[in-house]
Image (cartoon, rainbow, N blue to C red; front, side, top):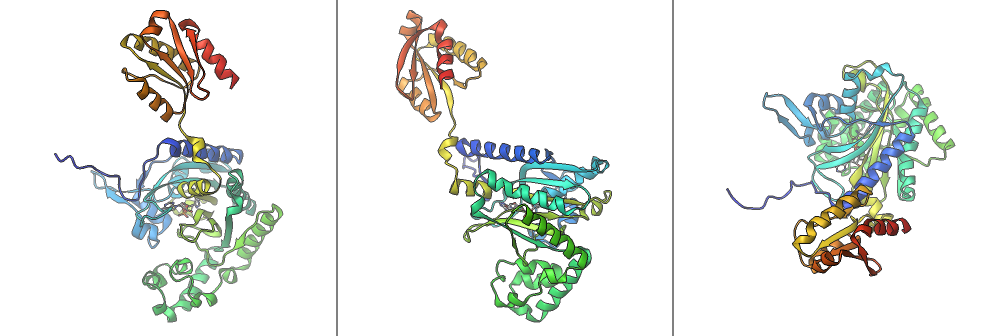
Length: 426
Ligand code: HAM
């Protein structure tokens, strides 16, 4: 056996200390916010049948053709780590016959996996918070969910740093008509496109529109506009969504090159981005997907949802509004036994304090006082209880307030009451 160190896989990270505390706080705020809109949490497995993603997301998308982590289990079944969570939620919606309810509103948080080139804000294992709403097609759903997405940024006070981009793919016929137009437009200029887009002309022409490499080329200025390809009912639907957003005073920008990277969308699609060209700037994305439930074998059910990339969102929070110092791990009491005979007294205090709901650290073996203070500082402890030989004889512990430096001697039987008095004052 070799004793060479093993590092974590590329594109992944460990989460601990203040980063972990901040994550927990952010996720619980997001879940609570979703509940105020009537969305309740669902958890699905991190791996599913590969077919689910191929059929839902689309074989020609980057996510499926390049990024999905696929493996065979011991029985030779093809499974994949989920690259996104909409398809698993739809699978669960169908399997659990949720269509019998007039409306199903689900929220989720958890890891997704994509084999992408890691860079700032782009990971191979990342986390999404998202919501999915299964209910009959209605522009008010699109509007309410987009306003829920925007209220995330409001609640965290970073609304001014992001922008809502919106577009419509129209219904299936409009989308097909548009794809034909895009193909016709780009075919004579094939050699001007990047290597990927040359292939996309046949496999996935829509994606040419939002290619990060080609996008800036002048050829794109005259590319057909999605809105012009929408039929009258698709236009009417989109116009109503925009009208209601205006009424709610939700600011947006119509982005006619926005097409989204997953195949299941129709009509309204949207993204929330921040204005930092260097990093990955899409923080949240979603839209309407009216054919996916039926396409995966369920009863025809319309749906709308979005997912937020937690890492990108927290990066933005830390950059603009959050001080990580506020999320340092803390403990209320650090007990410092200085001799073997003080150990069991320390455990006794520890148990009693925890029963009162206080966070309390008790060492398992005797260390020097210097060592204890260092550790208490690392844990941001507020009060130290010091018990050495002298204290064991006198039956009095030393209580030290680690913030003010104040110190007092307290009879063993009064220690808990004394600490509780102090913690009530704070
Ligand atoms: P998506 O746009 O592929 O949509 O991903 C949503 C968000 O996940 C992105 O805006 C981004 O913040 C984050 N994200 C994606 N890839 C990475 C990565 N490699 N590293 C870090 N963050 C990443 C979906 O996944 C759809 N399922 C959204 C949806 C829900 N549509 C309808 N319902």
